Amino acid sequence: MKTSNYVELLSSLAHQSRLKIFKQLVQAGPKGITPMQLSEHLQMPAATLSFHLKELYQAGLTHKVKQGRSIIYSANYQCMQSLINYLQENCCTQNQCDNC
Image (cartoon, rainbow, N blue to C red; front, side):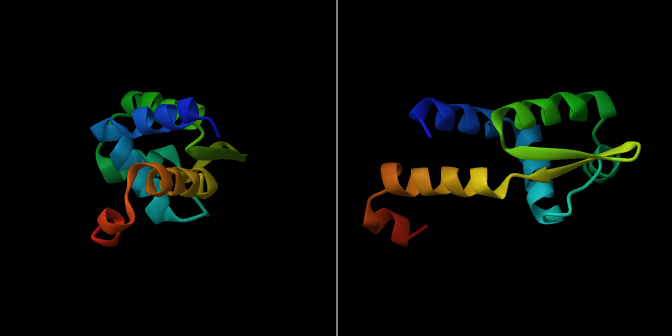
């Protein structure tokens, strides 16, 4: 992945609501969660949630699958791990990362 892709990923997560949404998706696990469940859990209006889910999806941080009338969102763990690896390899010295 190019550095510009990592900038896009970090930019997507650099918003309080999107970070909360992404955290909830990670905690939901690979089975995912519906926008309605996210909205109820985070007490976020559906329109606001939809906007933020779109941003996370476009950055590649989420997957979405249509199941009947519902859309199930889940975290893209491979993308998340790639970002973590990039940060560890390019932004930390060994001594600093041992303390994180």
